[in-house]
Length: 100
Image 1 (cartoon, rainbow, N blue to C red):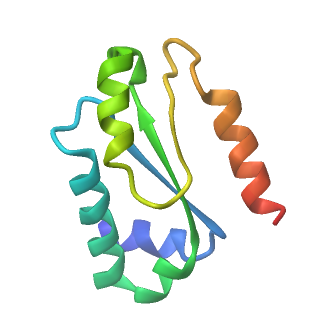
Image 2: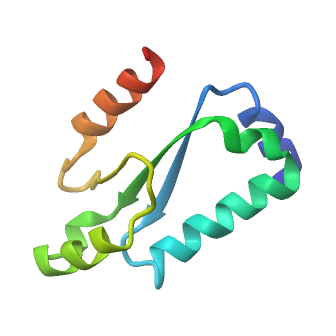
Image 3: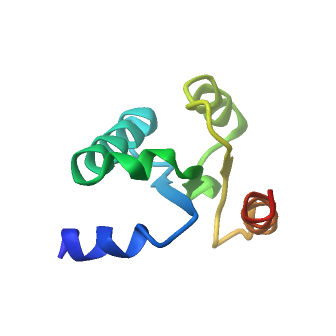
């Protein structure tokens, strides 16, 4: 299943990583995803990436500040489908990446 899924992302020009806010270590989860891509096809690491932290409605500003300190050097944002937070910003960011 995983290999078939990874074949589909080879056709994408942008990779959107979605990691839940209640993850124990968001940065570590991101590095695991990069490692999986590296193992499958190192060329995937050349694609533009966006990181969305989902379930951000579970976080208060203090927790968000702590997470901000550890974010990787790629475009990222907090989103919450329940609260509608960041969804428009995510769509705008994807659109911007597609058109640059």
